[in-house]
Image 1 (cartoon, rainbow, N blue to C red):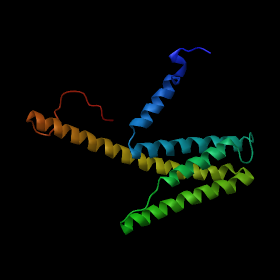
Image 2: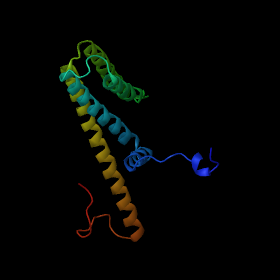
Image 3: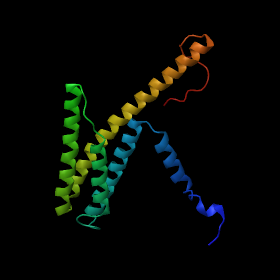
Image 4: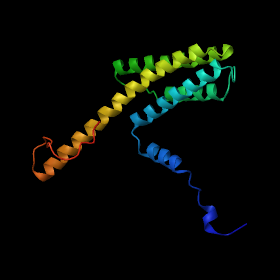
Length: 167
């Protein structure tokens, strides 16, 4: 065995793997939740396709992965001191429990239609988190712009010139 210190350093993954790891490290909690939800949508679509084509009937790595992702989404829900917020948390938790039970029930029959229903619910959830992330970004940009304006002694009104990176 070589005593080269290079052997003791963790190997770096591919560029896309490094990008993903960086995105995860830098993500806000809302963005992380969106990433998990989007992955669940992708896995549900794959599982529905696999079952529809009769490739891997019954429980398989895709159904297990989807169940784990739903469990991850469920574990990210915490209660609140405010009664209204706590009620919302309970309702969302109940939704994820329902999705998990619906998936387990669908596994017995390889019911791709049930998985499509799960995917549609998760897609709605992803849309909600996309809106939350967009709102976070706009708030961050507005705070940044007002901070720059205050330092420069200018108004917070954006100028008509320059680059616009918002979509």
